[in-house]
Length: 512
Image (tube, rainbow, N blue to C red; front, side):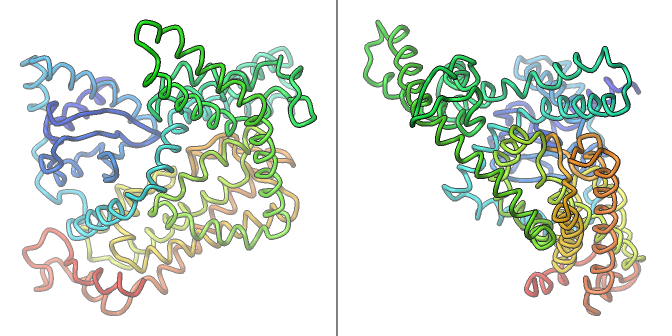
């Protein structure tokens, strides 16, 4: 089957399992997940959906998120959207194709059903906890930056390739062209941030982009604010966020008060003028100071407390993800990339995924008779190596409880290792946000050459794998857990069940 047919088949298999086109209110995707808005969540057939070979896992948040992995999700999404549109239009062929393509999997065919049920309950509980105004605000901020990640990755890899060619003195005639390709997006990233900010907060996107574009206009060097001349780009993405957000509020104020007959002339003019003046004579300066403080704070943190800072960042990142607080780091990463060319925080945070992988391997070793859990690990381990950790988190470690804590310990040791080298003067950074694990290698950059940067990051991953494995192997299970989870399939404890009993995880979660 060709790749095109494979992705079409995946989309056609997914559609009936999420309740059909009439149940889908929105379709979007990020790096790894197909994000669906659904009218009626009860129409989704979770177990059959999770059993599809292309599905790595499911995450329930404000949208229903199906983890398909990097690359695949970008190809499946347009096929899925086309099927939704065709079915809504009453195309009988599309309905029939979707129904015929959906495989007849039984429940629990691939995943460990007992752990999956507990994982779903934990996701639902987390979703309820995350519905606070602060976390909803962070989610909106994340939604501004997530669409920019593919461009950040592409330009970051090209920048890394260009740096390699320059260091090797190869193709000198080509490097200026590659530099232009890699730098063009970053030079105008504030415009895209402004556009997405206005769209996210209910304004006219192009007006948000227009206001944010003031920040990168060369002529701002002639403007004096707070006793100093402004610099093009001063304030960066933080200034663009503030400018576009202010523009949205000015636009909404105008819409409520300006007569319809002159709205098309007055509202855009007032929006750009008021928000633009506020940007030039306030926001650019303030955002520039905050951006400089973020860069200085990151340098100070890793220079003076690199190992300790790495220990905390690597160990706490998985819980931050569970709480939705990791979204607050996205503008920080982007600000660091915009200022220094790379973010030193992402490689440290990526160690959390290494600890998760090491923990999963230990679980696989410790449960030789639990074929259900081992099948889940086998299907999710390689995506875990590439930085897609949701299937391992929600399908294995989090429902078990203790292994989630030991996975965090593995991430802490890996983070401490990378942080120590930052403290010793070897910066390990990433030129883009999004990937982690092995997928981060093409995006690595630092201050002492690519070879040393890659070596430190690879060694950090190895430390995370080993620490996560050892912590989970020796401390991830009680004797009771091992006896009940590792029971042979034909023993009374699991007879007639499709997966291990959920009772142990209930005890474990009390100990976390």
